[in-house]
Image (tube, rainbow, N blue to C red):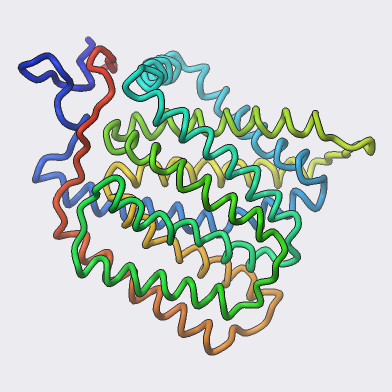
Length: 340
């Protein structure tokens, strides 16, 4: 049978919040959101190193197009299942409706621009870890934007923890030997990513896990189309040879990206965007650990920054337990159904 995704109010409009948690489930959703957010940032810290290896074996645009193309091929395999196709069809219809079209299109466009800028800067940077530290500034921008624009709930203790963690991230950025390579691309990435997450957080908050899954699928498909078109339009005359090892690395990178997207959007169904932003310095720690194999022991200032990040994360996680559930005043149209 089919049930409406959004209950209707007495005046016929959509009820507040699709799939909103009740008081009993809110702590569980918050804990799961924190765990998924942490996982997404760990994957985001590892992803650039794997993608950089693919780019080194091919070239910038062909390498990224290969990674995203392999991921889309995996999604296409899953969409062979009738239930998966029905789910994506229903949620695509909801997200392209007039009420949600702007948020949906702006998020996908923002993620595409951010992706192009990110990988262009990554290809021009001599050290991957430094570039990861630089691009993490997008989350520092998103934290106040989420509170001021999305009016997300907050607590003084949570903001204090976020400030400590983000200050640790800044300390890593400015005490590491961050050069100017890729700086322009990083600035474009920060701006585009901030726009993208404004729309994505509203969709994930109101749509719950089904909305997060649909957003993951379309973000990957749109990015694939964008990178393939760019690779074909700007390809060099020299042929790119892709061996079995490169394909294996590409599949690993694509799996990490899909897991990253899904974990991040699913996390936004349980925690506010500013809390997810406060977790972002975890990426710097992961990048630091990954680069430790080739760059030697970290400096004293870096160790202090890592301690600040860990302390801030603990404060944010404890403060999140006492926060009220995040509610959205919008929900996708009530005529969209899911099977059960």
